[in-house]
Length: 336
Image 1 (spheres, rainbow, N blue to C red):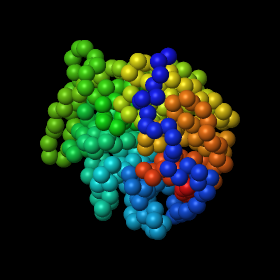
Image 2 (cartoon, rainbow, N blue to C red):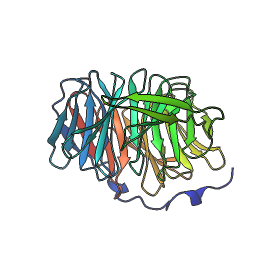
Image 3 (tube, rainbow, N blue to C red):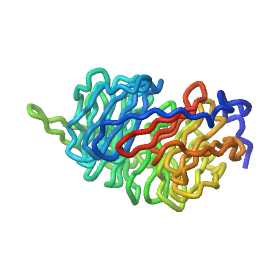
């Protein structure tokens, strides 16, 4: 295996690393049932939560104030996302639909229909032009955010699509599934041959014919022996995946190699994320620990006791602070 240290940022200091164990906890309440999902704006000042009570709530994380309480779904809200420019937020539901709304006033932009079963994961592309959704129907769908049109259907997984991520430049999309596989899709090229699908969307006053292409994956990554619950890119080549097999895998897509299989967690890995410079990777598990790994050599640098239950999200902010969140009907948001 060739050295890959040049693929990552500085291996020296992670900002505020010495303070990673000094957690402060904020609490956000108001949902009437279990909180299933949480998402943050890039500056972490806005937070979206989705619940079994069918509602989405948007909070100001600085003062813990509720900004919007959004109704409209007819089933549990399984996933939420906020666009990088903080203009839109989206929610996916057990009712098989996706809603795209304005962050400013929570007005509905589009109600997206295309999945046959519950929508379990959604994410905006880095340029906010595209939304990707994954479902129990074993497919992922790419949507045009501006028009609400379906762009492409990513098919091939043998189980629920549980996780997805765009690479920073939007070149790749990774999907993780209950079939234990990670599939990586290129938004340009790698298309299946044959006749493109054609989808007819019907609205109140017009019918729209939309060409639909079905790309094939550029990579199929095989190592996990459990459901792939989280995927995260550092750059267009380096990808991490966290699984219910208790491991985290780090992959180099440029040469299709597994760089590291990180072991140590005693239970399901629910979330993974890279630091801003790619030098460190964080993983959160149902074993009530958060592990900080050095990316280039795969060593565990620090083990933290989780301060939240049922961790839904973990991420590094630009200044190196670690963000985690856990949920029941009262959401706990911890940061270093």
